[in-house]
Image (cartoon, rainbow, N blue to C red; front, side, top):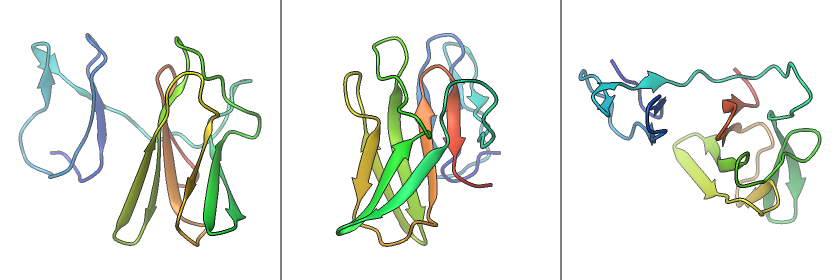
Length: 126
């Protein structure tokens, strides 16, 4: 059973989907079940993925990691998501962009997730 806003990935082609309406069916891509991405929040290696929020004029800024995350064609952050109450804001990034995003929300405690094309789904809190 899927849950609202869960993220799934096809291990064969790399398609990534976010659930907009939860249902009872199985997500299938390329003839095989898609894998639910687990949120990670503890850094283990030299790569830094946990979103860091800071207050800025007019809202919040989300930086990816305590040191800037690579934004290369083969390794980059695809999107940044901030959730507060019933608001969901998503900012799409591409290779070459600065690994950060600003949102018109006034809460540095908002749940934030990022998706790295190599290391998966990361959040700032459980």
